[in-house]
Image (cartoon, rainbow, N blue to C red):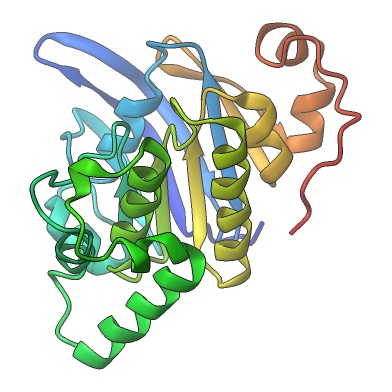
Length: 249
């Protein structure tokens, strides 16, 4: 990782109402990296992503992007800076078409030619979306909806893509397809910060990882280091020994 991270979160604390969820949390994501955040339900993973995306205000601490503080920026300004999020549950506009959902992802852009180019990129990554272009988003299968959610985020042309549980509720074949696309995005210089319950799958496709427990970072290291860690293997990987092929794309 470079000496100047693309994203740097330091001493970040926040929560909901009077309930604190994050406690002086710190993470870094270098440009071009795939970094995963794993942990049990309720550990604070989604809260961290929402705070980075500007959907939840920080109580204290700082969020830096490209070395500049974005801690107090509104979420739409963070999108313009190059941060996009694929939320848990996809949060699509069910009564709008696939085409309309995709174009909403580019709402902050004025480069019509670039928008059309990025539409073509989304169709290359997810050909089924071009086939479903005039179909209502709410009628898509779960896998197709996840593809649309990722495609919509890509329409903002992000430098940092935040993904919250992209494999949730999907069949294994679709999960493999989603992660194959994430590998291809890294080849296109999109930096990925991924929250994922399927720790085995996440670490197979990541450069580095963090383990979150009760609102703090308990462990960090390369993907291989975390796979080799006895606690991580037993608690999060179900005893997996890491002998399956790990993605190096």
